Length: 463
Image (cartoon, rainbow, N blue to C red):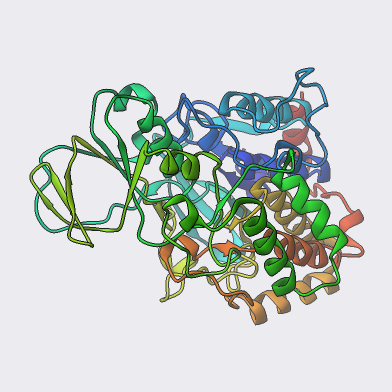
């Protein structure tokens, strides 16, 4: 029904971020469609869809207790035994149970591939879905499709005679068997794949690193690192961020020693200035000689790769674990990025010109993106309801969005494309909570359906 459609909101992406926002919209009575281009929900955690970027050996890199949604803990309706770092299959099952229990599934439309979204008058958005003749019109849009879609592939001079793949296309250790493998990039995926390669055949795996990296163990004194950090963060709340950083770095140094002790390049940045690589394996495998660490690639020469230090080695397969470009294929780049390639948004959530355009999960942090997306969703829902029934709060919020959109982080991160979305989890979460709290009236409201057709539409979706 066209009338009902005008009053609906649209959430694009049924991964963890989209599901987080959808749950809050259900609670607040905001009518919406949850559009997912894949045939199933789960986003990057669903190995069975084109959206999934996990692989058979993938496990959570942050502690499960500090990653999953706060309103649905790991002991709720779940397996009797939950490990600290569960597999991708467990995480997908968790998302499915969450969506079912909190009434999200009636709003989910799979196979809905958004090709283009365009602003209209009165804050509305036109959304064109592949295969649908007429575009849909929504009162507002929440873009929650993540930032792991378009692989970043560096180019080098020369020609490589073997096979090159991006980590997005890596699914199984079987792809590495009996091959001389070079993995480019020491992020979490790159290190997982390098570990797989080290045991996939008799050949020694090679890891190319442009810069030194802090390898953070998954356990500290037998406890999951994320749990330890969360408790220490709470205890040290009054201290400045720089003091907390040096305390953590000193503790890691005392317990594990510097990376150079494991024949790994020394980082030139503080531990909080780059996205952490959670790995107990790479230092151990490097010190055992199962992984050889090389600097950046200089050029290709047949099957040989020549590195920046002048050394060369022959390979059959190169896996580019080089991350993803910040690109939303269905939205004009000027709507969310500035000339410097950084988001020109308020807290990576609200748009300064389009007051009905929001984003969730467009952030990279040293903690749970799921929980950050839920906090973003709380702000978005409050803003929608303030616009409807608490105009003073709406005006205050919008003034802040316009004034602070695109404001750089007070923290300094490594200057690379990978860190354009980086934030400190604890500081960013506290800021989101403070912004959500400015809605004194709106946060107690539910969406008021002004037209009978809308009420019918909501009721049908809930049945």
